[in-house]
Length: 304
Image (cartoon, rainbow, N blue to C red):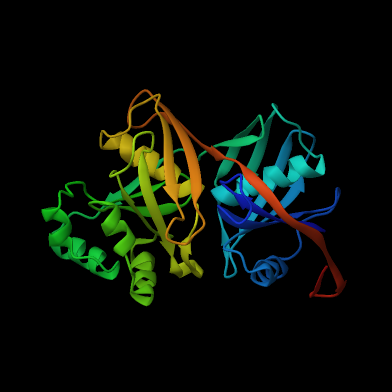
């Protein structure tokens, strides 16, 4: 099996969010879930994608954290199609289909950029009563009353465009930078709300930027992510629901700054109403390394 390490949502090495990508040889099926989890743990990135080619236009991609399988991963999808482009399995300026546990998603490759359809957005509830709001912000290392005094008037909501996250507004970039979660408490809270984690954001941004964001998912062994496609897809929908993003907007989210891995995530939303909309998320990527994985003995990995 050929593997790649791809920095996604960046055009600069060591920027963006790194993902592992494994391309299965044609005609072979996925290895066992145990092997894929162990491979993801061995590569030590937040997500590793395993790609099975169905035909010239269709691929089946499964995504694994070092702990478990997840339905979809935005940055690993960007990394997957950059690796497929590099390996000659796909071509520029052609459309493809990605079969995932979150559904069948269209992928557009345009001038080296990978644009992917998000799963249809799902509203999963909101956090609106004061004790729950205070708990959420306290777990994230902030004071809720301080945030409201600085102008936060949006309500956190659970939204999924492939993976569910809590969209958590904060007042400004200083507040975003100051976030310091209690990770065990955040894991428990995420489990209770049945989400992957918390996507914190502020609309305090320079011209041309929609939001600055940070993403935390310790329940899945990811304390912080440098770039998250699905979460920013969900944030695009949240912004549409709350009026700071409009149908037809091209959005730009900056992430990973606190981690010294600056990332640019682009999105576009086309909506006729709250229930009927299409969201695309995309960006660039850079191949950092490539090699081979072989199963020399049963359930034993060899990576070179």
